[in-house]
Image (cartoon, rainbow, N blue to C red; front, side, top):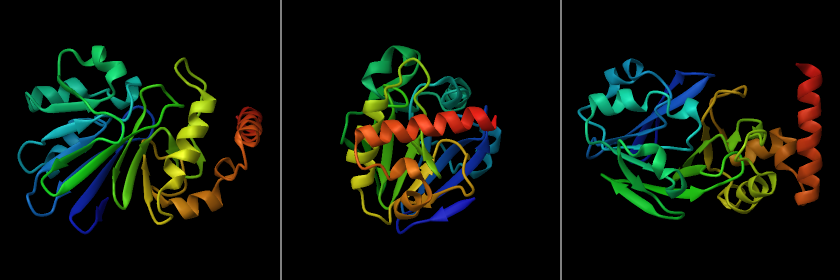
Length: 221
């Protein structure tokens, strides 16, 4: 599907390991393109690539989100790969560039800002191109990410959700790393209405809501 914005358009492709999204963003003026998460086979993206994408932005280094990275690099040698400094050693064979918290990279007329959002994973980064934010596994349609793996931290997730993402304008639309909800994207305002995990009054309240979510998840599966 294609979503136009004022100076860029976003194409999402669904596939990969578990309903993963790969996003292709095109600057409407320069026609330069960037990719977020090489989690879907390149053959599904390549028909929509103009020439050579400028960069790949990694939301976090869980395997399913970088599954096809080597394939992308093979087709686009020297392409820049942006991610968190903590995981630089995972990308030694790439043209890896550290992107810091609140750093903005300009590609064509696209300005993409990194927001470090640890919690689901320690190297999680959300990428903001107003009015859109690509949330990886930090936030999905209808819920937050989970904190069940090594490298997860529920207190950090709370901080990332409540003190970073939810401070953005209500009309900001999230584009998550997986298609786990009833729609592909949603505004922050509507996601708050939809998800009890986004309605916590404090960290303690969030811990209780997450515990309840996990219990219900186990009972229903």
